[in-house]
Image (tube, rainbow, N blue to C red; front, top):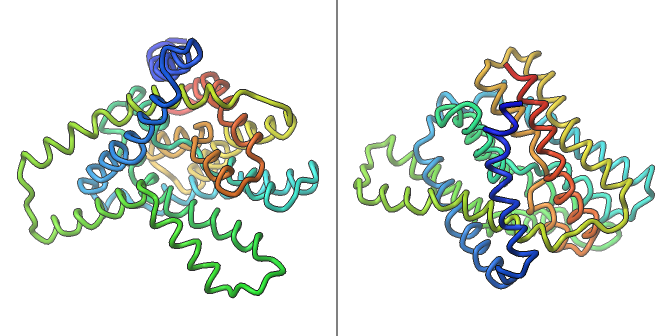
Length: 314
């Protein structure tokens, strides 16, 4: 019970506070948009840049950490895609969006603060390794699948579809922050020394990222109240909160993953879908109601499901 109040509750109190002030009209929608623009386009990419630049690439990018997490993610996508197609008879583009909702867990805004509160800042190395691949890999996969789905029956070549997907990924601010951080990491290993004042400025912006993003997330979630499609939403919640971390947990044991890696992989996999799941749906104009409602409902339910996973983990 103590984990619920000391680890999970503080994070969701920030989200809830953002939801409350938006609901009461004390924080206007344009304020939410401005805050989220700052967080997602500047503060969070800066945090990712700093984390990637300082990450020990040789020890943290471990196959037995990454395979369990991403096996769970892609399994969750396939189950949700198949459920949308064969059970709920959704159109092809809706099926891709619903699969993406279950693929893209909120690794950063929820996964990092909860892991840090549960196990301390030193436990985040595995999280950063997962996050380094998360947006580039999953956006590339999701956009590629969607573009091929849209192009079915058209005269677009495979190369043009792939180029469109790649250009869409490389324009996202999170991916830019990750890539710049990895380049800086390699340059520092080659002898580059950046002044302390530079890192102090980077860290000041980075420290604002998670509180601002969590507060803004509450305001964003207020807009996306549940509306119909409850059976589909329930399937998405089950895939995101139970299936993904369960597969990760099982494969982590199979691969002999150490305790620190298991904590990072399973907790990160147990997070609710991120707001990027809705943004993906909005870009393509498909299954927007399912995506928005799943983000809201799963985020609320995850206060209890994360508590369960914390009790299971060593």
